[in-house]
Each structure stands twice: as C-alpha cells, then as structure tokens.
Image 1 (tube, rainbow, N blue to C red):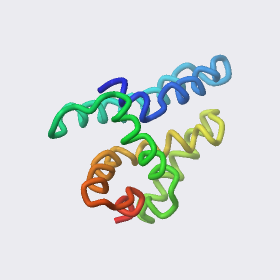
Image 2 (cartoon, helix red, strand yellow):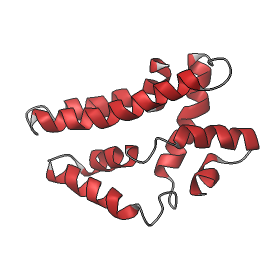
Image 3 (cartoon, rainbow, N blue to C red):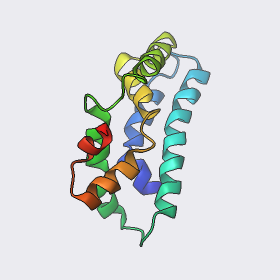
Length: 136
C-alpha cells in the first residue's frame, strides 16, 4: 500500500524538489512541505488497506490510480469557488516561505485531493471519467 501510494502521488519527484531547496529555505519549511505529502500518502495507504476486495498488485494499482489522480489534480473546474480562496492562500503562503511557484501550487493542490481515490473508484464502477465525477 505504501509503494502504491508513493508511486501514484509521484512522491519521489516532490521529495526531490523539496530536497533541492536545501540551504535555500529554512529546514522547517522543507519539513512542513514533506508533511503535506506524508498526510495525503498516509490517508491513501489507509484507504487502500480498508477498501473492499483484494489488494491489487502494485503495478496494476499504480496504473489504476496514477493517471486519474493526476487528471483530477490538474483539471480546471474541480475545485469549487468556495474553496478557491483557501487554495490561493496556501499557494501564497508557500511562495512567501520561498518555494518555487510550481511546487507551491502542487503542495496546495494536495490539500484538497484526499477524496480523489473514492472519486476514482466511483468513476470506475459507474464507467465515468474521474474528472467529471470530481466536479460533482
């Protein structure tokens, strides 16, 4: 479950971006950034372990979740207007702490993506596109 979550979230790429900030931002900022990833990853691991049915193989599960997860993450119109101010505040906060714009956006997006795995499964069951389901 850990490996599936790590690969689905592309956590290693995020970790590398955070590690590249050594000496450029305070260590506490890097730890805060890592914590955002860890929280979502922990949630996904728990979700995988408690989902009904057999645990899919690592490759199968990554293929099942990674594409739809990224589609939801980058799609426009998914985040409701009521949550947009929170998202924009998070992006601004990360930028103020010295993170590059792209990384600040990625970390802010992760804050809203915990329901993505339920959305992906619901879309799969109903034979719908995950992005369409996420907009509902």
